[in-house]
Length: 194
Ligand SMILES: [Fe+2]
Image (tube, rainbow, N blue to C red; front, side):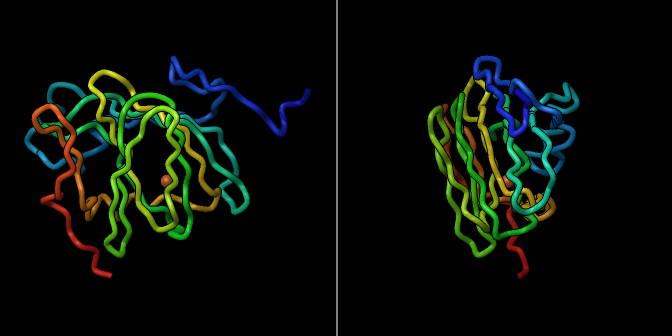
């Protein structure tokens, strides 16, 4: 049997795809300016450039009609009281959505629109999260010891706009307060001048 169209497996225990041809690793040093407690960030980075999250992808052409898919693995940990998280992004083509399926761990998706709506939705194994068009999205691992693993699918022409979040931040942050996750206003959030 030729492997096209193709199938592949997901080993949930090892949090890996059976097949992938692109592996992205994001370390603490690539997240300068993303965490609220900048002193805690500097102290932590001076100690160790920890691996925060990884993405495993099967490459497909980045054009309309294709569906890009892969596995996102956010490791457990915190910077200050803010949980390890992905950079988060809008899609460059705003009118494109995305589907996430949570395979492992305990987390949340922090989302918002340029118009000011926001939402924080729970991610746990077996939950499907639908991110509608226009919604920026960031996965956050709120588990103490376990990876947060999600499988994602989005349109091939969507593209990634990381710059807007890097510059303005998300409206809401997920932090640990008295041992529990809590959604708070981001003190450093700036409104986009639309
Ligand atoms: Fe996305």
